[in-house]
Each structure stands twice: as C-alpha cells, then as structure tokens.
Length: 151
Image 1 (spheres, rainbow, N blue to C red):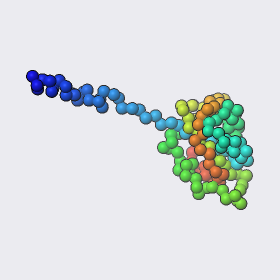
Image 2: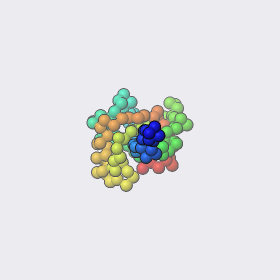
Image 3: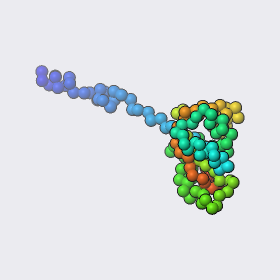
C-alpha cells in the first residue's frame, strides 16, 4: 500500500512542472534608428527633454529623417551603437554632421521597412506617438552611418 501511495504522489515525467507549461516566447522588440542632420539641432534638443514621442513630433520626425534602420536590437550595426569614434569635436563641426535617434517599437510596422512606399512611411511615423525614445546620440560625423544598411 505504501508503494502505491508513493507511486501515486510522485510526478510522472509528463506532469513535471517544466512540461506543464510551454516555454515562454521571448519577443525581441524592434529598434528604429533615425539619422537626422545636425542642422535640425533645435528639434533634437527638444526631443532630448522628452521620454516619449509627442503627437506633434511625428510629422517633424518624418520630414527631418534622412535615413533609417529597423531591426532587432541584436542585429544593430556596430557603428550605430558604438559611435564613440565618430563624436564631433566642437571645433570641427560640419553641416553634414548627424544625430542618431533610437526608438523602441512596441510592434513591427511595415511602413518602416525598406520597401515601404511614401504613404506607408508617413503613416508609420504617425504611429510613433507615445513610443519610447531609447537614446539620442551626441553630434556625430556623417561617416557613422556609412556601410550600415540604413535606407
């Protein structure tokens, strides 16, 4: 009888805690990196004072973005995340310098993909309201985005 009770209360391989629940799926959030010319410095400074994108910023972000990159954080090109070698010396400013604005997207939006048409791209930018501004780089040399896959 004791053997029966032990066998009854021992978990079988099928009922162990690890097999009862499926493994959690880790969803990698998309990172959107916007390349914005340094001539838009006033706008960049206003963004630095915000944590999230405000509704009136969306169209301006669309107009001021020269190039963009979209993808998983783990696939972010090295130059777009480790840009210390490209920080501009204040005595060496150029009208071609840029800022990188990184935004964490809650969901994928096809309007930010490489093949998106202009209307889809504008609509995608308009969905950025309340998106979290992950980081804004210091002023960088234009070479920072060369050979990084921006479009």
